[in-house]
Length: 116
Length: 109
Image (cartoon, rainbow over all chains, first blue to last red):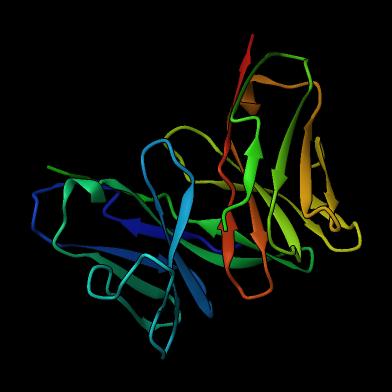
């Protein structure tokens, strides 16, 4: 099973600034997934990041607001740009792992952002 | 389209049983179940595949009705450690894992 390290674990940011979240995996993975979890809500997929190609964004999420980098098979970053209080959420990095012949998700501990 | 879970929340005492339902408007290739404790990341519990095969937790069972596009998670003889929010996650064959609305479960001593 892959181990995912995310940082920062939490941060308090000012409106209008940008913050980059880093996700490091201890093994090579093809796809990395970025999720947002707003307070008391479910997980919403932001984008899927494949190494060597542009990230694929879900409806409602755009590259200008959430640029993603995937420079190699073990690392990815998500930037939350021009933040507003509505961006206050937990951002989670996730990868697929094999479990008894099936693919399931494992998550990083998350990055809790508070925007003032 | 996000799968809908029911109930939204449930409180039970240790030793009681609970059922959490997950319903999708899209065809399902597989259903995953995750549990998230407060302040922690979601943790994989179980996966159900087309054809009825299930893999995962040995004290929690689940069902998957492909025709109805529904899944249910059965928690029997609940323990305090079962408290948390449960999410179903659906795989639609396009490598997109979409999570359900969530069910908050609290087990009291």
